[in-house]
Image 1 (cartoon, rainbow, N blue to C red):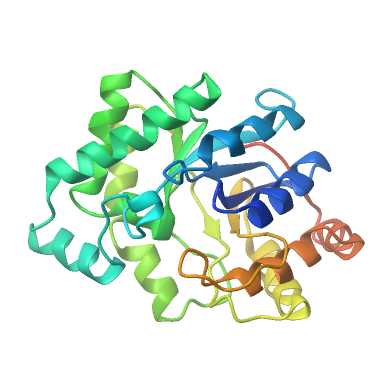
Image 2 (cartoon, one colour):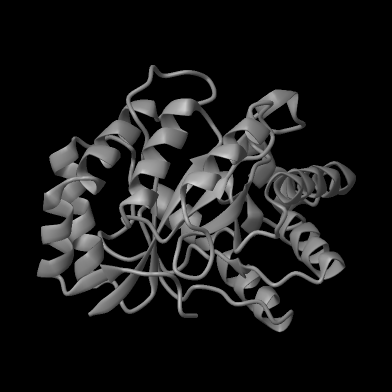
Length: 266
């Protein structure tokens, strides 16, 4: 059977998101999940991780770096401004370096360990300047988490959103990370417009599983139902994803495609 690395984003965002992710982790439906550490509730969220086995035989816990939303009043810039500034050489390197350091330190303080992997909220870790600051941080810490890369994106054929995610710095980050001795995933899936019903999401998952080679990382965003808020504009989609990922139909789909959820082997 092909091993699929199913990674949930945004643990720490809200009680509804945390509960959905933990439920999937406890029943073996996730390979790991990434943590947002800037919100004031982060240290309380981290205490809940005592419920799930972490590390060998359990789930991986990653750091989901944010620069595009003002969680907890943190420094941020909108995603379009970040992208434009990154490619124009206008991003404030000191602010970015300090933000990544703070997020890293809050992770290690809460969990007493370094993250198993690192990625970015809205994939900002791949942008010029940001990726350099990230790799510098990992070198300073002598840490070797694997780094999530969003290219190539597996089926369905990506629209403009998917194309941008795949091409805005992904391959350059892969090369730089590997040069530093860091492992990266070779294939990636899970991008869509957060506009699907549970059945629609199930159909997309079938397409991703059909096309996915061994050790493809599939991103997901599960959570219990919550109202849309400035911090969580995709809240309705989270409930649709959780409904499917926790269902017997997901097991059936994995079996139909000869896939299993596993920790990464890259």
